Length: 166
Picture 1 (spheres, helix red, strand yellow):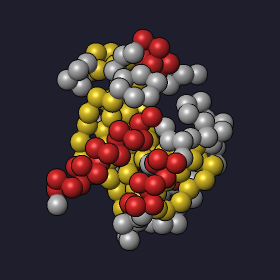
Picture 2 (cartoon, helix red, strand yellow):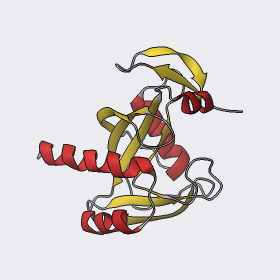
Picture 3 (tube, rainbow, N blue to C red):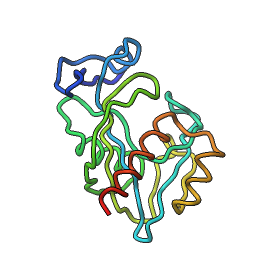
Picture 4 (spheres, rainbow, N blue to C red):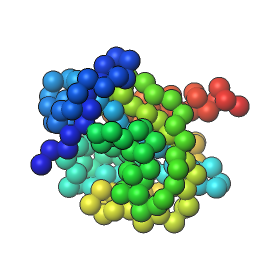
C-alpha cells in the first residue's frame, strides 16, 4: 500500500490528503523531513541506500529522512525517520524549510540537525552502508560518489545556514 501524505501549497498550507505516489506523479508539493547527523566530534553521517528501497536504490545520502505522515510535523517526521532508519532516539532541531525541486517531484524539505551517537544501528532494509566523514572528506565524496538528488541541494543549504549562524 502506498503511503499517504498531505498535499500542501506554495506557503506550506495543507490542501488535502493524497497518496505519495500520486503526489510524485502529479508534481504536487508535500512535506519531507531530513536530518543532518553529526557526532560529538563534528563528523557527518553518510549512508548508502539499500538496493531494495523504491526511491534511489544504492545511492548515497548525506541526510536521513523521508516523507511526513498525515498530521505529522517536520520535527516529528525527522525523529521518526531517525528511529526507523538508524535505531536512535533523538530530537532533531528544525533549521529551515525550502521548496526542493530536485528528486522525483517538488516538495517542501524540512532540514534538521541532530548530534547522535556514533554507534548507530541502521535498518539493513534501508541502509546498506554508513560512515562518518569530516566536512573535507564529505566535499570530496560529493564530487566522486553517486548521491541522491536531494543531497547536494540540502547539504549546500545546510552548510550555508551553519556558516551564517557562526
